[in-house]
Image 1 (cartoon, rainbow, N blue to C red):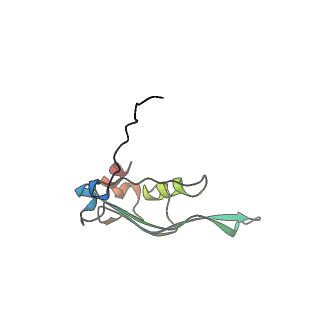
Image 2 (cartoon, rainbow, N blue to C red):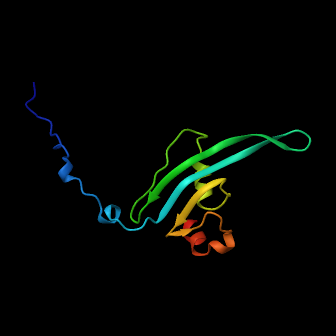
Image 3 (cartoon, helix red, strand yellow):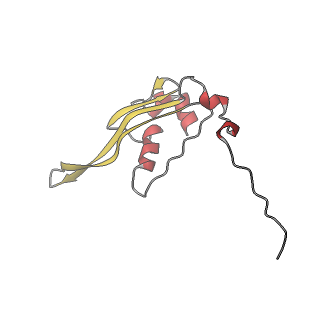
Length: 121
């Protein structure tokens, strides 16, 4: 038998965890998304009549403050990429609101998005 004991790290206590001041401040969010929706129509028939819709994104809400990072995790086909395309204005949302630095960019064209387009890309 060996008398060598294993070293164990001390447990991390709640008081030892520090939240960055940037993330914990009450400043305005850098990005605010409210009720974001994207439905893609399903068209059938000779005249391309809409018969149904695929609900790719259905009511997403979140805020990202300066100094924070947002991670999006989900199953294949759950709407992660569609959400990103909606926020960066690559596709037009069916509903909801996207604000960047306090400015509503939901329906801005890429030409009018200005600094937002540069920052978001």
